[in-house]
Length: 423
Image (cartoon, rainbow, N blue to C red; front, side):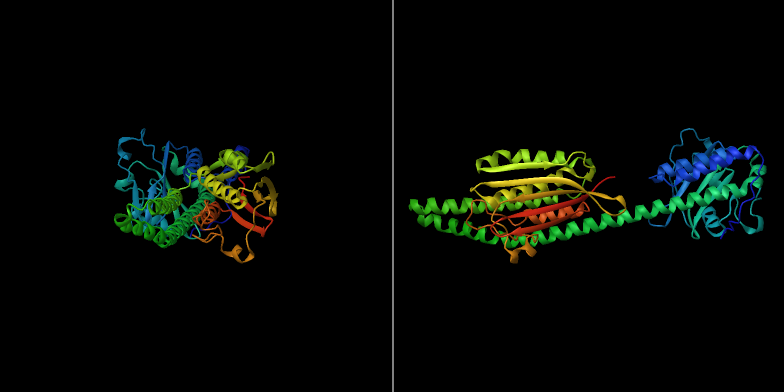
């Protein structure tokens, strides 16, 4: 591993400005959020320090099987560099050399094949002057290839420690972003696996839930030829079958709506706008039932990263559930938003949904988020599919939020959604 001993940097007056730029650089790279931007900043600094003309950066791929060309603008490359490979395996001679020696390679200062080692005099990188490895915790994460002027040898000998500082700091920042990307990928895979498991559960439940409706439809079809002249039978059984068909349609719509939401499109949103939009859609339905909608939406809420359509689906499920709990006897639906402070200044946004309905029995509270579990009466016009709360729970959880319920039988229910804010 490279010995990064304290650097010996000239203390002449002209170095003062150089040190100031170095401090700014070290601060900048710790705040850059993406790998392409970080690569651009690293190359800009290295080219400025070496008086180089062009640079390219190769970065370790996600599978850790090779390195790929992260900087892709080659429009102004000299002809001999346009054949520079897009990817390199770990067994490539240059990659192998940088990974094992962790030393900067200089085409002019390091003679070809000196001491049995590879230099930059390779067919892949003709015309390049420096190869600078970015090594962190003994692992090669990336390397930069630079084109520099004819004075590179003298500069390199006098500024080796400075380039090592830049490379080591850059390697730390690259490692941090690579780890963040790995974590994000793992979370995405977990989210997708969880969604697929949910769909598997839904599919099994769907098969069970439609068995009874299909049985009644089958019975009606079988009996109709011999009872076709029985007007009362045809009228009553037709209503039963129509209700069963509508139930199957609702089940299909619920499952398809959830399945279509596989890839959330996250954006900064104002939760108050989303809440108001959903309540507007339910306003006429609430008035018809004599239900009053009250809004208590806090001003200047922090914004939230969310998929607007998915959160609308979750909120509409919860709002509809609240209206159905109050039925046609009237009542009040209160929706309240506010911000709360967590540890270290972290803020979250809460949405409280309170109804004055019949409440949920204590024995049912632990199961209300289970798929196909419903407390609505089977004979009710508003018979539930048992998927609304399950889907809302899944969507909120996939947005890194939480949902809790408190209920008093005969008095009403409160659902509380908590979502992490952007800032």
